[in-house]
Image (cartoon, rainbow, N blue to C red; front, side, top):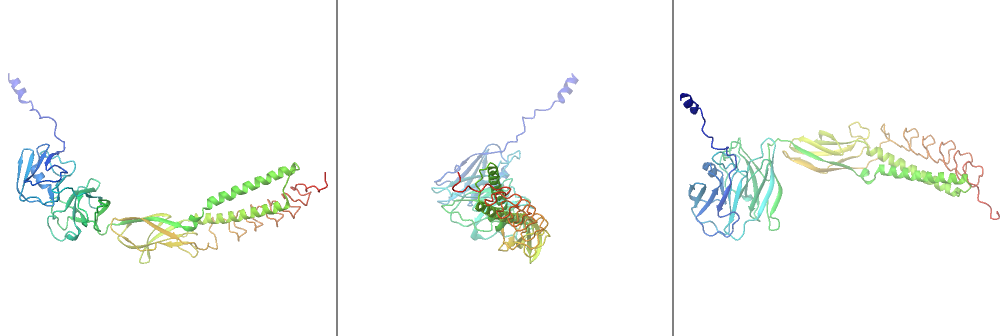
Length: 474
């Protein structure tokens, strides 16, 4: 019997079911959300989905524009607020419950809740969407206030509870916000409140305001403004500059495409010449000395085009350097054409670029240079990413770098391709004045030319078709 009693004494009481982790909800309100034409009423009523932490409800509640209440009371899940005076006519009101509104188990709302209604025929339809951007300060869970621009920026020298805004919003975990039901044609200032200790009171040292830099004005034709940025920063936080360098000489012409086209045209011409060779071998060649001169001219033109394209290709392959300067001193340097300067302290800067032909890292005479035409102001945490620097066209340097190709004035240039004036060129094609040229083609005046094709006046020419028969030949 004693054992049975002891056994019963060790038994635990039922836990009462699983722990409540569901967020509370606002089930209904009077007036209802979105209702217009609200007549004379003496109370606002909000009913919740479960028992609430009543103090948190009262702390997180705001009416915009502000409304005075003569009494507040709870009836189980319902909160009743009795008006001290009638609501203004033709006015849009918004009842706002912050994200930290809690139930009795400290579960918060999934997100802040706004309940709009109007004593007029329509609701204010304006809205602003944007993001609070911060690095050293967290940007999530902040209240965003919308005030008339004419009221001025909030005071940062004294301690106080922020004045009631026209409308109130709240940032998400990513710092994004949306404030709806804003009036049209009223210049607005949006300010994010970084409340370090969460007491709702601004204190100069730990807390911070961050506001839009220009007024926001919604119009009947543009009632939504998006991509508004509010920067929550320290004064010395660095920013970013980025952009691209454009070389007009390289953009207007495509050296690689020109080289491909020239080589394709030469291959086609040489293929035709081989066909003439075969035809001559069979006694059916039709090439004349005039054709030979014309072909030589074409090959010479192709050589010149190839030389120029080779020079352009070598020039455009040279590296581009971009310099960030302040007070004529280089602050930082990066490679182009696409460039990005990070960790740039706030201040006024200039940007300049050059194509480093000799790759010595310095600007030299004859190198293409350019500069962004205006000074650029870097503000804390800002990123400016559309700065284009135009390089000017300058004369080529007189002495090429180690990989520069096709200098038409230097017969010893190691990589000259197709220079018709250089008898020592390794790949010269069609030089009619040099019988020793290894691949000269079609010199109609030199019977000893090794591969001459189509000299109609010399039947012994190695590659000449027979002269056309006389008119009286059978």
